[in-house]
Image 1 (cartoon, rainbow, N blue to C red):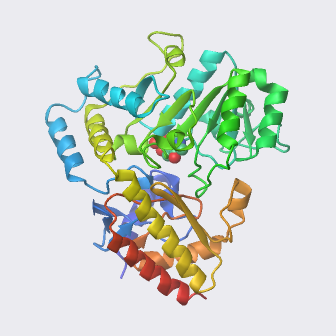
Image 2: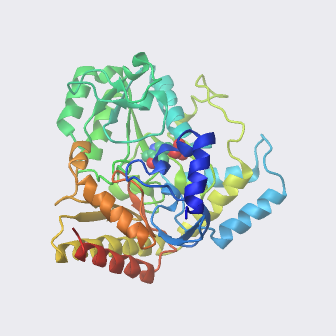
Image 3: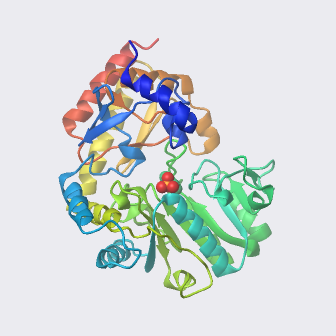
Length: 427
Ligand SMILES: *Cc1c(COP(=O)(O)O)cnc(C)c1O
């Protein structure tokens, strides 16, 4: 008997390329049929066959309060009654802008957009407009959305021009992007000493979460800060994932670094399409209508999305919120590490606030190349085994995982018991 999931996936492939609206959803990395969800509540989701799963994806980061938090649903529902969009300013937009500027000290002014991709694309254009320079630096394995300038991989030799990592990106566009290894200070210093005066911006995930989880080595972010200051380049922290995920003041607060521009998304939209970019007033005022850098959006600052975001941001400010979230996440990573060790499996894990990385390797990777050395077959076996026990991790060895405030200690213990059994039967 074919499941409803399978039927839906087969039919979807007829009408939607690959059957999905974003590639990682297709389970291509782990194999098998993607799960079609029908509802979520707290830490759980239910698929089209009504099977429940404990969810460690949380829509890839936004759902820090879990699914369908009653306060968020109430705010969204009430706001929707008063009209879905105006294409004109509203008081709630002012409120969330003030809140973001208060919570993130490096943000003096902020503009709302509808996706993380829009935020990073706009931040890059703004940095170029502000500096009058074209070149940017990004790091291998960091993902900043699907803007042409950022879909770039390293060419041969660290300082050669970048190459498109997607068909359809002009080589001329990619050539303005230099791609360096994450955590590689020597390459960074060399890039700045050779072409510092041409570098408009450096964009970085302050904790990389799109190549599994890679944390910054001590001194890496501080060196980025000082090199950008020294050469007049704009330092952009892409906190679309880490913003209000790793702590109340984002990764920049955690590591004590003040970027010039910050991009936010995921958590700040509370599950609705909303993102933002903001930073130094002097830079932000180059944006239209004040300045020459054009940027716009019909649905930017959408009232329903703002309502979800505001409610979420209020709730995460509760005393002890991140301490508790970090403790739950550590309970998971430490428990999994202990279970693997008990059964002699090469595995490790780490977390930063409410995000975590699982690695089938002896020590956590510090670069994209090291991430690629982790055992992918072991991950895929672990993923499918956990899935069959009703526990949903990201369907790829190259993604970070997320714990929400709705995950209880019992949820984590249930996960650890399942993992213990899987590790004890390890082939
Ligand atoms: C998810 C993500 C993006 C892209 O955001 P979308 O809303 O998917 O466009 C950009 N940067 C980082 C660090 C992300 O994790």
